Length: 209
Image 1 (cartoon, rainbow, N blue to C red):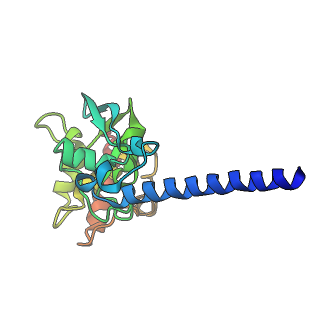
Image 2 (cartoon, rainbow, N blue to C red; image 1 turned 135 degrees about the vertical axis):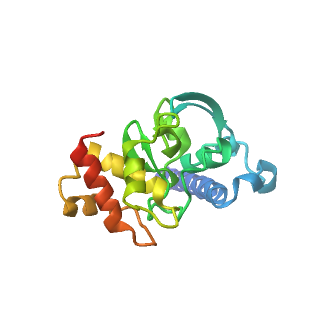
């Protein structure tokens, strides 16, 4: 009886392990396949795993506007903003969380939107570079970047500005050294760092935000 039971337990464990590996393989295949190319029929998914492709409800506020959406669980916030909502001010740079070009504010906290899934932020308030200004009136940080030439090619600028605003709000703009440290997650390939620091210092000194 003990031997039979042991064999039975081993069989259960073996089946569980195979199920785990099968599910992991499916999820991996989904993650590595472009959204437009993924179809349950193409991957011949088991019905138990097909829900990984089903769209989920998402209620999210972006730049003061409420959106009720259906999204795939694997859709990043960056792709939602750029591809679905056409808010292309948020840039896709490295797409790995290393350059900061995709920085947005989620409930006031700066976040690399390429590293977070849209579905994780149901009920959240998102601010992108498009929502930073007040109509045609630029945000003080935007004005300061223009005044101090805080950009060259401009590709990283939206993320730089969003991080710069957060840097002040977080209380990390008390010195040039501190600014450089807390802005280090945003890369400027053109090398406009000195001017970016000057822009942040002016906004901080003026108490404009």
